[in-house]
Length: 92
Image (cartoon, rainbow, N blue to C red; front, side, top):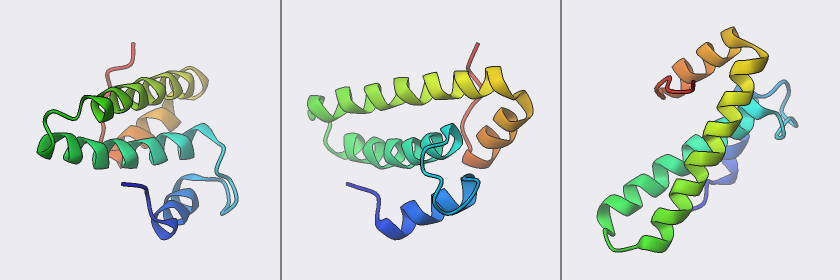
């Protein structure tokens, strides 16, 4: 269920300012998106796993708040991020 070390390093390198930048909002959104995709597939198979469903909804909320912050700071960065991650623009 967890993201592998290699995949995490790959995401940090792609979305961070350098390979050690795991704290920026863009990297956090990318990591959350990866976890959300994995958990979504898990919930599709295990329909009655309500504990995981709740955790998934909490991750979606956290990603939404981070995306809202990025959108307020730099709209162009936000647009390029959601395009590269393949997520919809539904932040007001």
